[in-house]
Length: 335
Image (tube, rainbow, N blue to C red):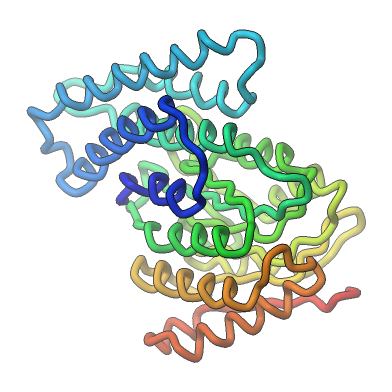
């Protein structure tokens, strides 16, 4: 799954300011995620390293308690407090069941440490007024095959750094966090809603809270969530669902209903996806989009940039069979 190092790269490319606590979270979270990546690669055959993992978790727990104790008077955002409490919750769960590791607890510690790092860094580098937002929602439940999203995430971060877009990156997304995150940034224009997950016909797969098992997400839930959040801005230039069979999922967004936001473009995958192409194609698409898209592009001008960027990507992408799988759906400006 290659979790380690993802957000360190994000912070470096965005030139975000860091304090000593952020650096401690980064180092410890990276070490925890490295352990989980090895666990994915070798199964439960990581005996002898549990003491190192326990040490990293214990050290990060001290940092989390320091954050909470220093900020008892609502001086930290609700997102940071929630991330701290989530990390402490997974720390409290037994990491061993019999002779085996308790995977939901281990994954919970790793994912919540990543989300804590992101939320803490974003709290000291807050979004600007009217700054556009790109949402990156990742979900890989423990009962599904692991996948890599490293290059996919890098493409998103590069795009944000070049275009002045604010990245909102959430790992192991569950339905409640998805909806709350959209509402939290509701005063800013949404530019892209990107999903990196498993999928099936007409649905995407998120994680359940607490157990990180699979839970199906229907298009109606996403539409309802967007309708709740998008009161100030009613147009979303792009939904990109990088998941198997996601073309059937995003097709629902092309039919506008009363009192729902206008989705101008949707990208989905027809049939099965694969790690290599999913990462490379997404990265290439965002590279072209950042080259075409100047800083703070008008919302009404973005759909054409998206269409042109996809055309350029398909022209140059080496796997022509995969090109045929990536489906772009359009809605006319006034429809």
